[in-house]
Length: 270
Image (tube, rainbow, N blue to C red; front, side):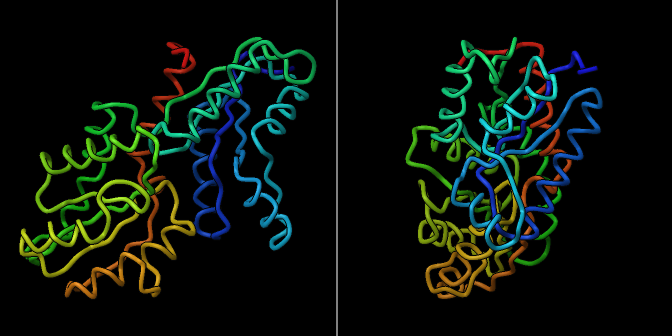
């Protein structure tokens, strides 16, 4: 008999990196433990990632629509689509639009109820919780005249402002902990100036990304001259890279879990 508890579809962009795929599996398992009565599945929005995984690694991941159809075929009557994005940018709003359109669907996608869970950072309280979750990383700078630099993806969407809010919260909560982005406001050169102003010599570089995928491996930690590691080394810093995604942090995962619970009990139409 199908469960009366909503199914949960975790929706991510996707990755080809083995460590990132293992982290997605671990996250799905955490969700299954937290919601034992729910069917929990994972979908990738990137068609390119899905095709390359199938071609190169013989790994099959569905897109959100296909995953919902499979869940419906299993007898699931309602579902929560939990965004695994960091901020509610274009990917999130595309997912919200999909759900809005499907609420009146018939046939294989006719669910009694569909809701969307917010990504990691949906407002100030989420930023405060994320900052607290990252507190252990302060130990990296003790007695080392160093700093911690977190590198997010960034976006051209107005939601990029949440990265700036997150950086302000980090400045308020921690000493010498900074946040920059690959595609949005405050790039590596800007961060280098801030690092010089705090007289840091050693920089601990962490991805502010859900998983340590291609962006972390190549654009943050890679040997290419344009990577953050290379840029900061040219600026004279001793750089140590930590290739760990945010989903490897239990307290960060707890924020996602809370957003899913809220979508189940106190849904907000987007």
